[in-house]
Image 1 (cartoon, helix red, strand yellow):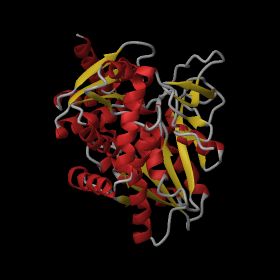
Image 2 (image 1 turned 135 degrees about the horizontal axis):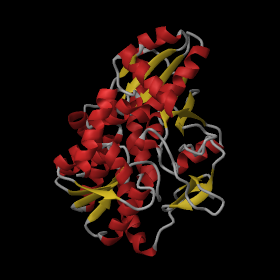
Image 3 (image 1 turned 135 degrees about the vertical axis):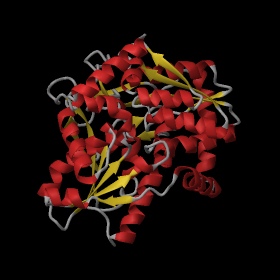
Image 4 (image 1 turned 45 degrees about the horizontal axis):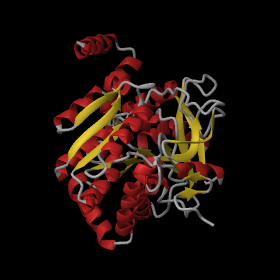
Length: 408
């Protein structure tokens, strides 16, 4: 018997009683939309007119020549409005909010891309908007904080816990409990209680559908291997969904941070530090200790340092459909630098994890093979972190001065 909201042994909806009616309402509206062909047509029209979809696939000929193995292609979600794949999910949820008649949206954000997308959607549809963001992420993602505020959102720095993404999620749930009648929580990734993993993956599936069609049209075939970074899992689920039924290898790349043996990483599915547990309303792999307490995570990419992972991806790991690997901070910076110099593209630090792993594997593959990398976002939001990693003394001084101004 298949349990509602479960993917193998993972998923579910572990909710306080006060939220049950709200989730029932959301699930009902989502299911209604899912089975209404006119809703998906409305969604596609919105994304085409407002968010420049479909995003193209770039033939990275210079990188292919550099590595001398498989041909390298890049799905350009960085060209999506607001600079990342996040708009796909957010605009879809915005249409559901309109159906529910609610007037306010809240969201969590780590790297800030989901926060900017949510603030943009709120401005477009006329919703009030509050964004919760860990204090650590507020400091390292100042450009996105600035844009969220200019778009009309209230950005609330979260000072509890480790002051990163998981703590922002906790605060957003607390807000939702207090304002359920007027407010919808626009969860940003394929995690959380049912129906969020399924719903977010459905909206993000537009990426994989496009990519599959684009390859068949331009190459007359599908790629041999697809790479995507994995934080919560929304961009990976988006690109992978186009190829689940095909003979295409799918590779999810997690944040190995300072190394999988260092204890300073955010790898849930390719390390021995994670175990199955229940937190934040669902069951999946979490980085937790023997007592079930969540471990601290580390990644150079703010959007990948989440302590859990999509229950759908956990099931895909268990059944062997997706292979999971890690990329260290050092490998990510090297891959980012090479991509900029060879192709003139600036991937987000999150996306650069997928590039790093693809660059390891491409030289070992045949020149007849094709790989696809999902560039889930652009890197201008990471300018301070990247400048610091490149050890540029002029930029480091600029960062220090800006930090002093911010704290003042």
